Length: 583
Image (cartoon, rainbow, N blue to C red; front, side, top):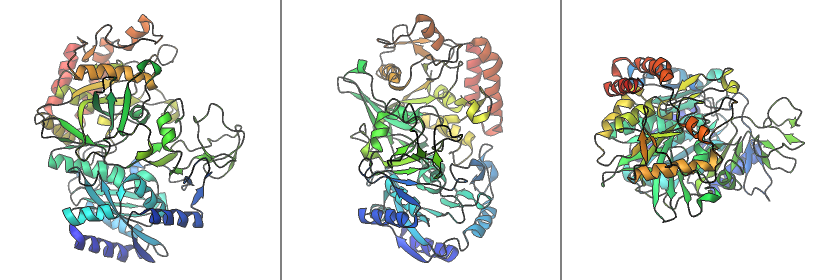
């Protein structure tokens, strides 16, 4: 949609369909945010936490049937089913709207309709794109104020540039049987009904900044990716920026906010973004990236002083917590925050909890929504309108024995192949059986708004247009020994791999050939202070050629075959080259 008249029509049509008691157009001010918070405190949907230890922090408890993204209810509603591809769920646009209108009809009776203009990307940035979310949830409106540039700044952008992505959202009756998350790429439109959970309801995030933005990116010649962005600054003051894609449970946020170990005195990690990156070719021929978000929507369980002290520091104020537990002193708590749980808690559903309780105190997908500006490691350039120049792209999964710790792609197309074959093994807790590989190409499987074969083609073609492309690497922090223990220490020690990657980017070429790519030459990784034996180091870089020929190559070919004739021949060529190198 374009301009003021389209915005007014969008509001009027939404009012007619949803029948709200009144309409508020959000301006993004501090006073408005306080009103949104107070509204929720008054109706009991938000609880104030300890305001001395966690000033301006609050707890939201969602409906127990509404605690995560629901992929089976998320659809790409392109005109042609083939445009959605085999990895997306598809609904014909007319049928999708017919179903959704039934759920939206009268859904806001007795409620306030909030009109939330928002900007993804910094004001004045050539990357920036505007959206307008209409919602009946003050929790969503308040969260969007944290996660985006919301209010008048977005309205000004729309007035100047015209285009915006409309999104209609209603929690309705929060009924899983009446829940749909719909994306209309041909119309640049989002409809979401029946859920109040972040990924389903904060439409600027996954819905706009990834699913629809990936379509924009294909059409306009750039990339919208599920990637963190960090800067690694050396003691000499030189900073190299890295974008990295990891499936869930692979340490994405921890890497984005890494605190260098004591051995790395003078080194710094700068956080540009922890979840989404938009990348464009700059006038200098390099790939430049911005984080389009303004906040963090992070998973709470497992976050601690040991795993991610910067994340913990980021959420001590001005944060909305969702589905965490609460201590008797009114402080948020979740599994992994402390070595031992408190003797008494109130769990995420408001029930009394003790260590003897059968259920977890915090929901496994409990979250925090916090302003990015509060992160101690936030980059001085995190809101740079031009972004930051990317020297390296990382793809990382969770494999217990197959992948080396790190290696460099042999070419751009080989790097695209490494991203297209990305995956992680399931755990017993998640799937009941360990070691099952779930493919998640470029960590975008749930977020690509069109056929992933066309997405791979876009990556291949873009590589021919970047005069100075970044180098591409694959990493895996999760190699286990025969006793099931991790061989690599991970967390802050991952900076040792980042250092080698930066040295490769700078042309030091401390690498040797392997069947998978270029691995660190002997002595190239800085291992000073680590208690890694020679046998453990060899294990971290061992390549089982027979396993690759008999298992990995056939599984990859089967995965590629799912996409039929659309699958780029270049990636099949990379697969055949890999098979030959394994001989």
